[in-house]
Image (cartoon, rainbow over all chains, first blue to last red; front, top):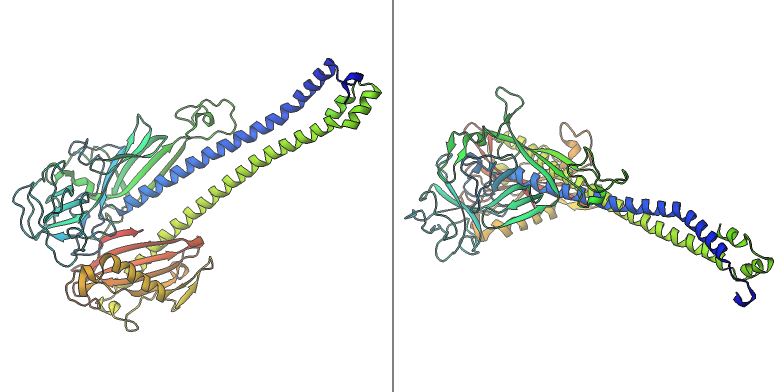
Length: 329
Length: 229
């Protein structure tokens, strides 16, 4: 285009062109922005669903297996001897008081699939003495009868329900199973043949309300966040109705008022042994506040005012029957 | 639309120059193309996300179905085991071992997702997995020898499930390693292990296992139940 021949655009032409271009761009940008908002909210919704799936799968699996004893061996039935599910934080650090119960936390334990159990060779001299392990069949060649340093383990008196148990982390395997500091001294001394020792998975799920997280505690020294952007966590407990059929709810008060079983500090409410179903409720929110709006869909309102492409809070409730708690006598 | 703008208020010479250069007409095409590309990319992203989400959800569903299928197989096997007076018969070496009535008598099966599973190969795999955890190094001569006990499609259960993905169920039994009789083909203490697996769609495979014992009144008592990784 040759500008010296006056073939350029006048200012008015340019302004009109720009105005028309702007007007034409509005619906285009509106469509584009809508598509972008939709893409963003879908990614948030997908993340929300995935977090819910992970939590449900993990809780379902752990609750279903709670109380599982060794997969082989002399037949230790853990659920008949202790309460594998406790509505409180249990462990070395910040443990809840004995016989306390809370709706937003749950501790459980089970022997892992590659677990075993073994006997003591001699009685303990004191509650802090190392455990002398009987090396017979059932012992793997690794470490001391399969135990290595930092293994989480359970020692239990199998004579009767509530006869006593202790959870500890192995601090040494030089000749005997050591359970020194920071483990507390055992609640009692254990003796063969009634005492059995086995590896154990111990977990406490609890709601960190301030941090809005579902947390996982290993019973020893590690608290880990498991799920972010959690708005609520509730556990409810049920027992078989008498006379049946059906279920009756066990209140938090019932689960903390005794009668007490076990030895301090590992005392538990006898009503926990009648739990046959655990109901879990989780409420999650979208991580980004620009896909959260206001109203009953949102516990914590976000900053979206458009009313479109919102990701409402997601609440899921599911029931789990702990398989090892609902067994024939 | 932009072409019309060029024409408004232009002299004949300007219009001719504009047509020769064709600049604004090109701009319209470029803008339209850019917008199309942006929207297409956003659309493709959404489709990928939706597709991934759908695959994850389907995988989760197939896994859950298989997990419950394995539990159903375990329960079915316990029903047959509770009717047997002595479990030594189920621990005998094949072909003398007693089998469940939940048995389709096939040696290999083509699953819904195209996989072909051989029951012999899976039994050998079960034995290898067991030996790795609690084999002769741990229990010596008492280490379990796994025997096929039941295998059939889930539709053969009575009652058959009304809906859901077809699953293939397999159950093995093995002696406990702690009975001390030195013979994995003999049940000396009324206690055995049961391992059940379910094969579902899209490669889903889940297992459940139990250590059971016969109580004094003949009723089966489950000592330990677990989902196997």
